[in-house]
Amino acid sequence: RRYRDEIYIISSLRSHDARTVLRWNMEEPLVIEGLGQLSCMSHRAKDENNLLSEKLLAGRIVEARFRQGGEEIKPAGRNGHHPLKKLFQEQGIVPWERDRLPLLYVDDELIAVANLWIADGYASNKGDLGYEINWLPEKQLGVWG
Image 1 (cartoon, rainbow, N blue to C red):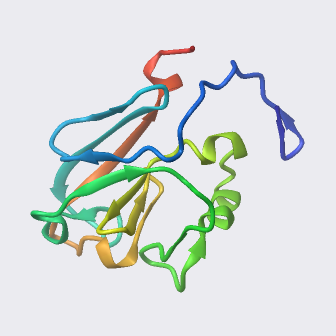
Image 2 (cartoon, rainbow, N blue to C red):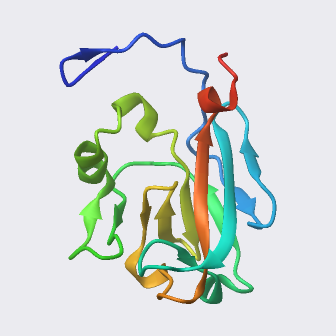
């Protein structure tokens, strides 16, 4: 594959159903077959905007979903809502991985994109308990399909 004038040699991607919705209790890692693993650590925020607020998630159901197209998020610490497509381009996320990154939702509201962005309204305040999201794609788990 080619992206931004660079050549990538990768194994074939496994098929993936982007309509998949998985509940995540955030206490245990969530293995997403064929894609990777979501996990989190709870600790006090040293800075604002870098953790997902535990207080705001207490008693709520978190779902991992996948990109359908047209999603937007207002990343904590940034002005305005941004289309995921533009944010992925800014970060240099290769196109074939974009649809395979888990999007975290609460009550149909996008609250985080893998370990990349946390929605402004769900970021922890400095000193508050929060979840540090960790996303390990399958290739980093040592599985090479």
